[in-house]
Image (cartoon, rainbow, N blue to C red; front, side):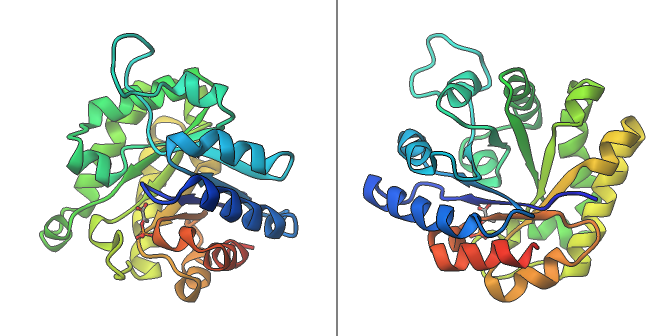
Amino acid sequence: MRRPFVAGNWKMNGSRERTRTLVADVCKAVRELPEVDVGLCPPFVYVTDAGETIGDAPVRLGGQTCAGVEDGAYTGEISATMLADAGCSFVLVGHSERRTLHGEKNADIAEKASLALAAGLSPVVCVGETLDEREAGRTETTVARQLEVVVERLEQDELARLVIAYEPVWAIGTGRTATPSQANQVHAFLRGCVAERAPNAAAGLRILYGGSVKPENAARMFAEPDVDGGLIGGASLDAKQFIDICRAAV
Ligand code: PEP
């Protein structure tokens, strides 16, 4: 039985004050949800504030990305080791906004996942097809390629610490979601791809769905057998909505 995981990706939103309020509200509610792993990814500059507010509450702290190199002269970058040092236990890698706006390629994402694991973080590797790719019947080919490069880069024991987020690009921030059965089909396919290399890791692998998840559609999505939780963008900026989504994962 896989334990559900729901993570909020705040992207470049908020302030120090709002971080503290939002995190405190989530922490209060999460104490009543011991069956779900709940995570938050604030902007880097607020990670420490978020960590202080979390204290001993069962909320995991995550980074929104990390550098593809360990350290050195890389102005503006934040390493996986720094995120771990600041209290993070996971990091998103390969979010579609990083791929499209920052030109991240599959090989860069594989390197980031590997560095995250070396720093003790769980990488949440984001994959997903564009609308053109879906309409051309290339969903599976696209996500398989995105995942394959990461899976080939990692050792068997590292694959056991991997999390995948399936986020169709056409569903991110658009209000348009994949149907639960469309999502489940891709999740089962992704699990199968990992199983070819690491069957034991595949059985325990958590695959989150992301793309316009709201309290109204979360329960149906999370009821699918291969959907193990969600990566939540817009709705994670509202404590009540985010908590209702976390409750839907129980
Ligand atoms: C995301 O950016 O990871 C995401 C899923 O966003 P939203 O929930 O707003 O679609």
